[in-house]
Amino acid sequence: MSDLRITAGPYEFFACWEREKSPETCEAFEKLLPYRQKIIHVRWSGEACWIPLGDYDLGVGFEDATSYPQAGEILFYPGGYSETEILLPYYGTHFKSKLGTLAGNHFLTIIEGNENLRPLGELVLWEGAQAIIFERA
Image (cartoon, rainbow, N blue to C red):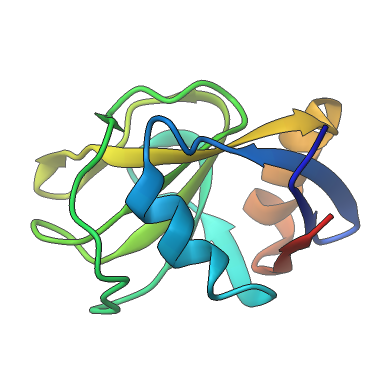
């Protein structure tokens, strides 16, 4: 059963919280719902899209941080070496910035709509920024 609906461009995904792995990140992000932004293609991390958040402070530190998320494992990077961001991988991803490898909190996992992750990534790569909305399912 999904907790969230994520609409990105023309695609819809359903995700579940990773509360055991990243409880503080889940709790803080849930307070932002519905959350609307733009998603763009990554520069250094491989096959993923990201939401750049500049110096935004969600008020959380590192939890269950990883540098190699699988497709559909959504990360929140609380900032530090690079700007704060949300990473949405659609295939092979090594999370990094121009300063090197980063690690982000795995706080959401897409459980429905995975077949549209690559089409979303390719759309963002070739057509540019797309609207994205995270909302309760």
